[in-house]
Image 1 (cartoon, helix red, strand yellow):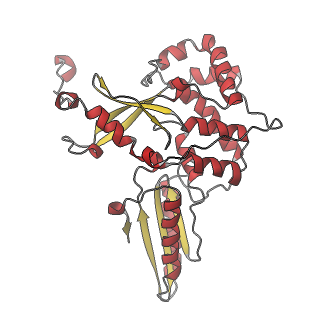
Image 2 (cartoon, helix red, strand yellow):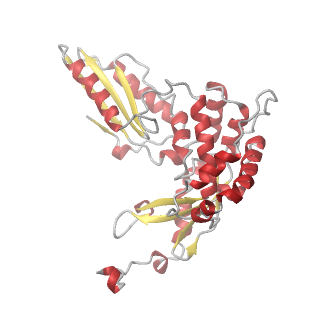
Length: 332
């Protein structure tokens, strides 16, 4: 009926109420950037460690697989155009991609993002009542998938086995099944019980410190310097604006966190948190994306290991700039 009559429910316009709302939201979404004052310096690349490159055939295949119904990014280049002209554009973008990989530099236009806030409830009262939906370059998303595939090839098969998100053949069901099995098996013993802490972070993806991630890539995982430098450039100097209706905020340049809605961001978060693990006997630390569960299998009312694991996890969060959302962190 709405289609026949062309009736559209009148929506309350946020910009009609407060034209400064986009700027306020942009400042709110960028609030974690103020705490990060360090700017890491990329290491020189080893000549014996050439960067991986993309072939023209791979680029053409990626362009032809684009979903034409997806929205364009800040550059206003629609996926329909890229898909239709894939044969003509493949060589051009292959050159740009390989130049970026060789120099570990990403064009600024690829790093821009536009945030379209969506109300979480009918009448938003605070800035936190708006969910940020990011629009980024369609071209950059294609590029990121190549880098994501390469990074996955560098990681060992047993990398962060208790992270059940962002992995093939893993799901939330595996997360629940392992935790439940461990607890039920433990409860068969006399004088035993379990304690579980469900941890919730505040804007986990937005708090990643590029310097710390860079250190983990270079020193802990021994990734090639060229791809480490590329990832560092991917995270730094990212212009962001918030758009509500026809009103856009001033741009803010971000140097903290990962871009929202990008193919590479979940994997970078997984790498950033891979060293958040259980360290004491009788403890489990299981992750599904940014949802973390700490389980203590207690014998004879001795909870020391569980309490020490909680202290260790909280200390890890402090050192890695992850903010615990105390109001939503619960114990069972």
